[in-house]
Image 1 (cartoon, rainbow, N blue to C red):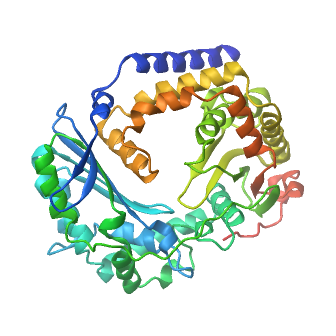
Image 2 (tube, helix red, strand yellow):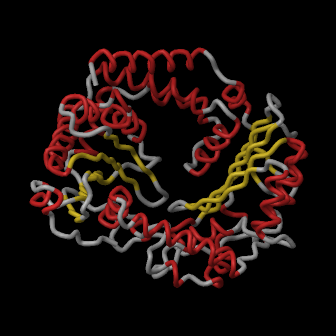
Length: 458
């Protein structure tokens, strides 16, 4: 990439951020009017009433997630999330989806390490039917054998594809390395061996233990009044059990670096996943860590890793890292891909840059630019009802106060250069956990046709 092109892109990004800081969307303006709504039946939600468009967006989450999968059956929560909308009540799967499609109702479920999450989006006039379809999915999902086998076959097919996908393999192996013997170290989507053993009883048992009102978090943004929304929430969630029955998950600190694992796979491009112990969301140094990580690898084209690995040495097309926080642990994790014969050089470049920021910290100019970008980009992150609902749900899961959106810029601006240097040393001075997926260094030095058969990684 030429210097001219790089400068143009950076200038464009700066212009977008500056414009966003001056032009606040209706959804972002509405964020200052967040209500803590409690329904007549005691269901709580963060709610923004916004009549800009006749649309309602709701995000919801139940505590549990993949960490509640049986140790010998990872993938249960993923199957549950894939099957909740495959027929419920008096509707089979085909009829249920026809009802969704007829009213342009968007309903989905997903699983993370700590939550079973979902999303519901509809036009205002279709709200009653949309909320009722969600109620049916949560309280009377069928788990019919024909649907279970159809979804199971799709999951297994995806797992087989991932078994030869270097990025997927690197991500799985990294979590195994970071969290050995802990639920966070198991693959949320399951394994080729575990998914075939999951029974319908396993799925039903999971829903009985996880879907309950005491761990439910809700965020609603849209064209509905508080009284009507309260009734809808009671009708939708009121019949769920009062308390979940969750298996306790222990707090854990990720494996101490440095460690490196090689997974042999005969592919032209080697994938490198790197990281280490992170920082909890409620640690006093969290925001300093968030800002300095933007400088290191979270800032896209402006990050140090991008400059060193892509622009300066041409080793990779992209490189990034991010902070990841969970209920019981935290990581920083990054990724890049490069030619097999340049993998060693790429790892060394990443390691040097991370050690440099640990030893020296960022400059004042880097810190000022990062804080400006982070504050400006928040406007872009809240420019639709759905994005605002997603943010409000995440802040609840992170146990933030309801006025956090208003306070966030002040918290970002309070980060000092001393704060940034201290947390950079804390995060990155120990080195890296590194997973390399690709040809062995010896094989990478030879023509592809001369390489030995790869050892299959599961």
